[in-house]
Image (cartoon, rainbow, N blue to C red; front, side, top):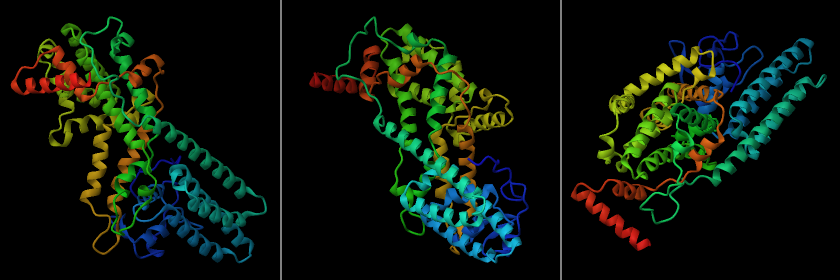
Length: 475
């Protein structure tokens, strides 16, 4: 991400401290309302991206346009267009006078700054040979602007090296993720009828709800750190734009969103497994109350994703049907948690809590207070909803940039939260259990649930009979 803060204002003065020129002087195409850019042709928006000798685009605009441009144009095509504009401006300044040479150096510095922000914020745009070729061509032309002392060449060399390192690191992460894409299920096809005395459960590894909540937060921040803005933009770019052509997201598939979603599902199933596999009601009750306390600690930390996963696990039918167990549980704390995650009014209560955590994060002095981990599924749905209710283009054919301002604002908030350094020490033993403990399938959960508390109605009796028949056939 660029070091200069963005989204301090949607438009107005440049975040770099420079005064923005009247863009109408450069192109009459973009449309403004109350001083804010709301629409424009692709060509005009690209022109607004490219610096001039005395102008540098607002960093909010750079982020928003580079993020949303992939819906309409491939990154290598955008780079080519940027290169063409650079060539024209460079030619206008190549008169040979000392004054013009100084202007040329100033222009080169701004182009390098743009490329630097682009490669740092969206390194994956340069993964293919076409994009790297366009980048090298622009870099070569800009290097010619300052051949005397070679400063530009050194900066470009360092920028390219950093880009290659970022691409290499991300490629390695994806290779590792590929091996663990499938969610874990229960091992073996025949379930035990009696637990072994030596069998581990989560309480034997960690009996402190706060510590477990901290370790869950560590895992969340570690996984969310590998989600990039272009990954999130795939929600939009995977669909055909009104240009009716395939975008980069369709060509280069990433698994980061899927992997993070799988983590949520696995955590929910782990919670259900830990509860259902306990035969003794007293111990099962203790396990339910333990997870309620863990979810509450997650809420206090600002880890809403783990909190929701835990609640979802306890609301799964195999767990929810354990009436004898729930009758012994002190449910007041669970009721509070469910209130926070009440889906009515578009999760109004949760959104209020999230807003409070976000405000706390903005003024916090410690990383502990900066933590905000939203419910990822709802975050994705919000972006998808924004995409569906607003068109990419207006009836006049211009890009509906107002839509992309809002999408990029939400994505930028997420990127800010994911950059928080985890303040908790990693406990390898606890994390190993959370990430590798066997998880029952839905079928296995029901079998374990019925073994703990028998079926109570005709529907449950029929389900239990079917499951037992399946189990015997497998045996």
